[in-house]
Length: 585
Image (cartoon, rainbow, N blue to C red):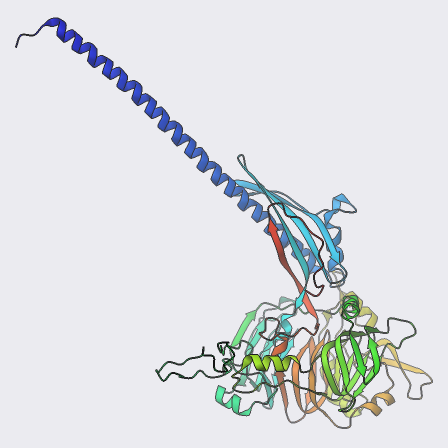
């Protein structure tokens, strides 16, 4: 085909223009795409950077909370709040607690204490601030953390020993768990609950449970356990209410609009498991009693009999007041305890007691006869109406006896008391251990170790540096650790003849549980460092589930507490406000 030359040249020009136009458009589109992609990449990068900065700030908060917790927990009980107070630098900027810059991923954080507010002797609120940063983002978080005290885990057990634990005897029955901060040894005891031992380097304990023990089946337990023993878990068996072959534990059997959940964590599940190499549980050591004096004043704690107020808040803090007290209750005129109270010296007690609260003794508690609740708690078995039982038991008696010294049972003035117990109250059966510096007032500081810690040599049969009156009241005699500040004649006169056979109370001591008892039932909990209880015939220990720190029916009777902390709130920029909440929280 013959074509015109000029026409072909025009076609080549048009094609070139199209190519150029296409190149321009493509370049523009590619540029726009690259610009958009780069913008999105930068946005994502900034989002990642922002999240990294936030995570770093969170890490800063966690780090300084734990640093404060270490400082607080390791201080002696009397110093815990005072060591926190200066950490905001209010008096000396150099004392402010600051965590300098630390790397976390692609970011860094720093943190510091901004403000400390101490609330009496009960707790402190600490405001902290942490900042996370990188090249693109900065995030700042503020938190308020409360360092105070909580119900202690030691009271979750029927028997807790801050040492090697031992239950030797086939006529020992424990209805509740038992635990030691060392090895646990058994010889034929019946333990209707778990057995826990702790690995404890301080006393050379591997945390083992050895020896033989027994436990009851659920049916045998329900058939034989008394009314003050805890219920089972589940507290009642489920039933096939609808006849469909399915057990129904969640019916409203009582018509009260509440489904009946029979799970009861504080109850006996028919097993006795052994848990070895557990962590040591910190004792809520009674150091300076000022915390409890303040609590007694704030709560208006009292001991009364009839119309007579025997103790209002604290007995013995005034020079004109006695430091020691003898309490004898009867059915017609019981000892009434309301809230927390402090007696600076010894408490000698027996008889009928009622109320809800704890007596703190600055030295010993001597139980010289049976101590019984006027209105004891009761757990039916099976327990089909938990709410009704909880309500009823909340109104019944629950008393704690806490001794900065020791808890002693029976008439220690009798020669047979001494011959039965003395071997178990001194080395080699007992061993030296570190004590609180405030124990020097009661003679428990025998010497200081290489690190400067005060140590008691473990001999409770020795004299403690104090005195007791002679029987004629005309002079004084040296006093032994297990003795009271009353004369022997006074103790012998008030003590019941024979053995102590019944004690309703939660018992706590920094040092020694000791004495001679008969066929005795304890209802509550026994918590101690050393234990030298000599029994006749049998002994039964029943844990009171109302004192479990995480219990379904927990009752706060102001038992000794352990250190704790909790974060009240945290946010970006929130600050510490004046707080007016309950000082026992």
